Image 1 (cartoon, rainbow, N blue to C red):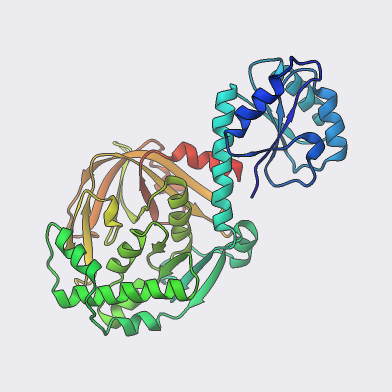
Image 2 (image 1 turned 30 degrees about the horizontal axis):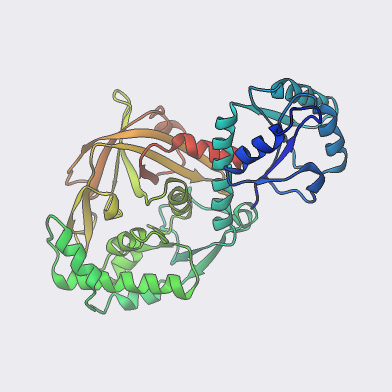
Length: 397
């Protein structure tokens, strides 16, 4: 997906001004397309008002060119750019053409355009991608369905439905893998036997092989059925895949949560912790997020233990540094609704009546969201403060 910046300069502007500003705009990575060279629009075309006195130039251009609405006009604080942009916006309004002005300094605009360029690259990654659903969504995910056709139309991502049988078969084997040895060695403690570890490693290898063979970019697994049928959890396998820079894997066949992990990994640059929201404290505006697996690459340390509900196989108890985080969830039939908040991990918890990894996060947004209008249960916690960037992405979308 292209981001095109179409600049306009008055013919009486000082010599060299246009070329100088074009070079600055090009630093964003976007295409700087001269009005006379503009042929076919993309979803992301922007009019840049380089100087005053360009109103008629823009009007003539729009008489010939077809841009998606609303038309976005970029203005900055020099050379009478903004006065011209205001006149142009009003001209479009009188012709019932929706438009808006984004106004900032030139450096700020270049930074913004650079973000849009990256967002367009992320959308290109999603467009044509495939998420594999291995098994079925867990029976308790009664609010977390999607419409595959709508998702395909909106994002360009396909859903592929696959059998759980290959993972069930893999759980019977116990091959030895270097990554399992590293996993055990780097843990601060490990209670399961080597046999349990190697079985979990075989499931991880099988899942990675399925992703390769089926050309999957993302996968989500009906991991509770896997565990009940084989006594082998998927907790290690999901950790193993999510630690890979190129892969994303979610629990419980939850498509919206796994898509959130996929999109969040693109936007933040790293994996997220898919978790249950197990406690909400309105007094401290905090919530507890817990699950039995996480990408160990984002943890300060971890112990290898058993899966919480069953006491079987492998579970991971990770601990986090006190740090800024972002809590994020995408939802809805078309995966276009979202909620996001920055926050801060303030505490690691150990509660025998909950999943193994447990963190308390104080949130910037009101925690009443989790009580009154939450997008189902699972939410994803990403290290770092990214809420503003995520909001800008959805505005761009």
